[in-house]
Image 1 (cartoon, rainbow, N blue to C red):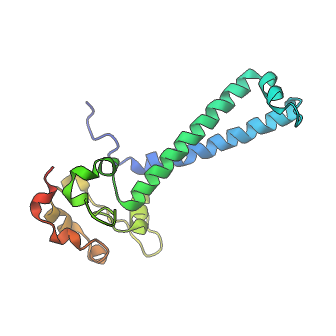
Image 2 (cartoon, helix red, strand yellow):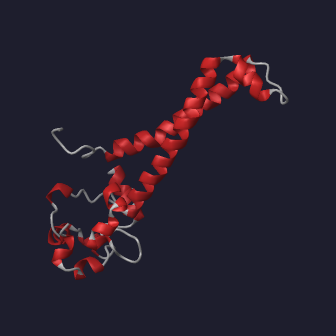
Image 3 (cartoon, helix red, strand yellow):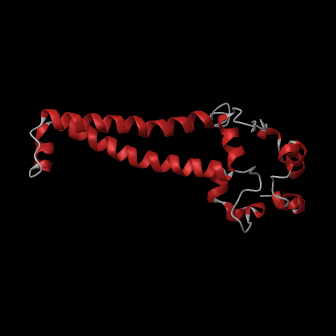
Length: 171
């Protein structure tokens, strides 16, 4: 057990990590390409055999970098998509359990739109968008959420939230 929620207040750092890791791995792959081009006798006919026979360690790390570039990029795309839609991973995978998540448009009832969600993630003012700075640890009911919505965001939240019965948030 840890002292706090894993990921509490660290989402921007984690998102930055999985955003920049594939970029760094692409730099490594470019370096491996330059190494193969300059230090191995590569011709178009025997390209694969020249790469395999050149240096085993470079081949091994290139394979690892390619693998990690693929899956971390997929994780980054998934996470950014969920952030822009206003979902947590739990809500996305278990939407069928929660009555308030079963809506026709597939959007989270707590989303303020992709632009505001992005500003909230970065926690920086961008143009006329300012972060909402909700303390989500103090929101337990729909009434708590509705009380904390800033006036400028009230019209961007889904009106279906106000029409839901109070028991729909019981899990």
